[in-house]
Length: 329
Ligand SMILES: *[C@@H]1O[C@H](CO)[C@@H](O)[C@H](O)[C@H]1NC(C)=O
Ligand SMILES: [Ca+2]
Image (cartoon, rainbow, N blue to C red; front, top):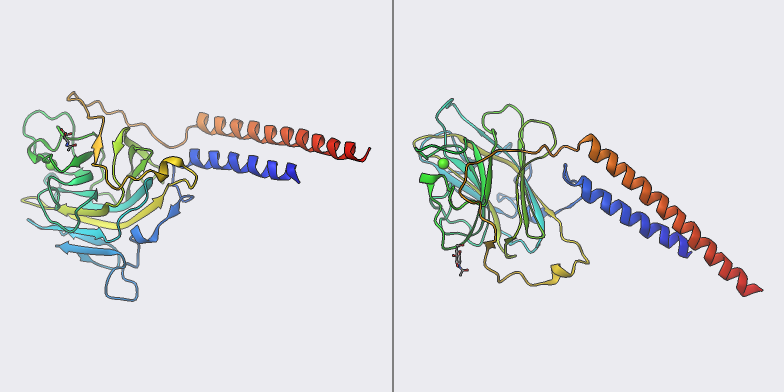
């Protein structure tokens, strides 16, 4: 009896380790929370999209949510109406940015985890001096001077309400990190993953139709409160593009027995301990598709744990049996 319980828990441990390693890829093993998720068909049985509200130029069609059309001076947004109570989560966004412009297009879109929702403003169609996290998908380079990166550019900004997003510098002096991602005018689906786990923010993209995430950046020491809202917004100015959201999926990454999960994070101010120092941007994107070595090590680790489980299990079983036998003598 004991030995089978032991063996089960040993195997459970091994499986949970295995899946947490594999998670870097498409993580369908995590728990999808419907109240923060936006998938087709957008309209349920009612005339409202369950859990979501939209403003501005946003148009909902059966196949996408168009935040802005490919026309000048538009701005639109879609906002989740339920505050996020999870401390650890991952957002996966399927989106499409496309338009007639070959060389001139803009301005871009932003994915938000912020306090104030449904407020339009100058930061890609939403509020400046915001509280929370912005992931900015900037397609137009406003910066006239020598730039240390190209566009489209994805960056992260954490704000406690005091900082201004400076378009003239493409937000470069307030960003936590960023990377170039060529996500515009592609024929296949483009995806973005924003993972926030144990105060580590990881942003990855899949724009090469590989069904695998490629890490854009990872920043430690990012402190975000619970109770904020998820949203997406976009804007066009003199230049334009269609900015479409196809789906938003929210995965709950909280572990039930994590003592840290019990800490109340609803009242903290958003902050980040690490800011990207002003320096030349050296792009070194690491492919996150599992390398042969990683798969080999994973399998090796798996076999060692399995063998250990079996050996210790048998030892336990024998000892247990000995005890039982002794009792009869
Ligand atoms: C808000 O953030 C700014 C910039 O990081 C910082 O200087 C300031 O002290 C913060 N304010 C509070 C109240 O934490
Ligand atoms: Ca810009």
